[in-house]
Length: 531
Image 1 (cartoon, one colour):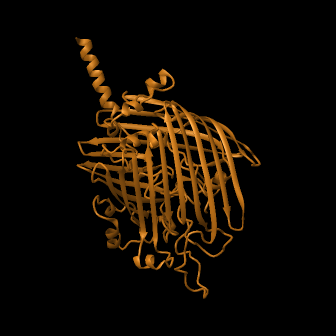
Image 2 (spheres, helix red, strand yellow; image 1 turned 120 degrees about the vertical axis):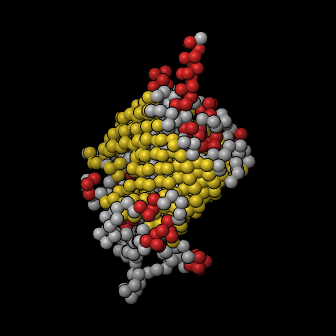
Image 3 (tube, helix red, strand yellow; image 1 turned 30 degrees about the vertical axis):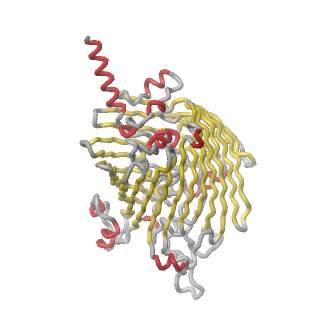
C-alpha cells in the first residue's frame, strides 16, 4: 500500500513539473506544437512565443510528439518532468562553400542547458554556448559590417573565422490563475508567420521583463526590454548606447477559428543629453496606447502600431496577416507619391499542416512587403534594432519578399526546405546622395537634397531604389533527431544563394555542410548586407 501511495505521489509531482516553464523558441522544437494549436477545435494563442509548457500539456495528440532521445541517459536527464533537468549543447559541422577562395567551412561549439522546477510556481532555465566558425562569404561580409553573428552575439575575428558566445535564461513565476511574470535574457516572437513584422527572434537576446495575462479569450503581453546600440563601441559593453523598449501584444480568440491581435511598441534611448530620463515610468502603464502618451510627453520617441488577423480554414490550414505602421497619412497613400513618412509593412500568408493528407507534411506560402524608411527614426539610436540587427524582418526596410516553405516530419526525421525571393533597394556609399530608406541604421533626416540643395527630398521613394537588388536563397536541411528537447540533429544541409544588383557583379553561394547541430534557438541564414 505504501509503495502504491509513493508511486501516485511521484506521478502527480512529475505531471505538475512537466507542465512548467517555457519551451525553447526554435522552429525545430516548437513547430509540431504549433501544428496542434492550429487545429480548428483548439483555442490557443499560438502567435505568442515562446510557449508556456502548461499550454501544451492539454493539446490533443501532444503525447505522440514526445519522441525519446537517442540514448536512454539523454532521455532521463532532459525530461522536463524532473525537478532538475539538463542536457548538452553541441555543434560540430563541417563543409564547403564552393567557389570561394577559402572553401572549407566549419562550425564547432559546446555548452549546456539547465532547467529547474523550483516549486509548482517557480521555474528557472539557462543555457550557454561558445562557438568558433568560418562563414560563407555573404555572411562573413555581414558580420564584418555589423560585428555580430546573426542572433548569436558579438563576433571576434580569429584567423579566417570568428568566435562568439551566447547565453540566455529566464525565471518564471506563475502568480495565481491569470498571470505569469517572466524575467529573462532572450528573444520573443509575435506572429504566425515564418517572419514577423512586429517582433521576431532575429536579433541577439536582450534582458526583458514579460508580464503575461490570460483571461477568458484574451492573452495580453507587456514586454519591457533593455537593448543596445553597439555601433562604434569596438565590442566594449561599457561603451554600448543603452535604449529601452516597451511593447504590448493583445491576442483575442474571437472564436476557435478566428484570432485578432493588436501590437504597439515604443523605443527611446537613455543617453540623450537634451532629454535625459533613463527608463521612463510613463511607459509602464499596462493598458493605454503609446502614441497618446508620446504626444503628451512631447517626446521624440519612436512608436510603432501593428495589427494581426489569423483565420483557421478547413481542418489543417491557417490564413494569417499582419500590418505594421510607423507613420501613416491616407492622402499620400492614395496619391501614391512615395512620401518618405508613409512607413508601413504588410504580411500575408497561409500554412497547411498534414497537407494533401500526408501526415507530418507542412506547407507554407508567405508574402512580406515593407516600405522604405519603416523601422527608421530621425535619431538612429531609436531605430527598431538591437545589437546591430533588426528586431523584425532580417532585411530591415525597403523590400518585398516571397517565401515558400515545406517540411516533412516522420518519427525522428526532419526534412525541410525554405525558398525566398526578395526584391530590395540598397543605400550604398557609391550613390553619395543620402538615405533612400533601405538602411534602418541611417537617420530618416539624411535624405537626398532637392536640386536647389537647400531642402530634403520628401517624395518619390519607392521599392528598389537607388540600386535595385534581387536575392534568391534556398535552404535545404535533412536531419535525424538525437535529442528532441534541445533540437539536436544529425544533419545534412545546403544553402544556395544568388544576389544580383544593378551595375554590380552578381554573387553566388553554394554552401554544403554536415554534422551535429543543436537548434535550441533559431538559426538565421537569410541575411543581406544593407549597410
